[in-house]
Amino acid sequence: MNHFYALLNRMKYINRWGLMRNTRAENLSEHSLETAVIAHALAIIGNKRFNKNYDCDRIAVLAMYHDCSEILTGDLPTPVKYFNPSIKTAYHNVEDYARNKLISYLPDDIKNEYIDIFIPNDNQLDMWKIVKAADKISAIIKCIEEKNAGNTEFNKAYFTLMNTVKEMHMPEVELFLEEFLPSYELTLDEQE
Image (tube, rainbow, N blue to C red; front, top):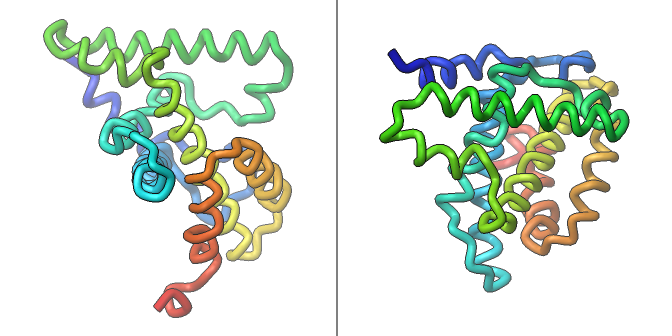
């Protein structure tokens, strides 16, 4: 019996933003899809507007699975993850263990297809930068949604995340922030 896919199905039970008061809960499954959509968009923008050569489909897949370790670890809040170097290192070890544990649930003939998805390698560094940026943009969108609902709890996170993303100095990210992010501030009627 192989548990891998049943465990992935549990992403919908992992809530994010545990230290924050939310007007609407966001689960890991929602976040992963949104991150994949944004990562795919960033890759397309990079290719079409900045002459990059990203593998858009591969980036979308990497983003889809980028937080799967949280199925076993839960979502540890960012301020805790990065509180100090020893906690950061320890948490990375826990994430590595969780990723390897998930992979171990696959049969041998399928396992190798997921190793490169779950465990970053040097050949995929540019792709992982796109996924990281998309992950942060997804968090910015959550902050915008909360702010639009009148929840000021996310104000500081919004500014911190915006600064983090801008400091990445990625043209495809800057274009997304300028051209596409403002629509997230609008209501459905305003988007027509």
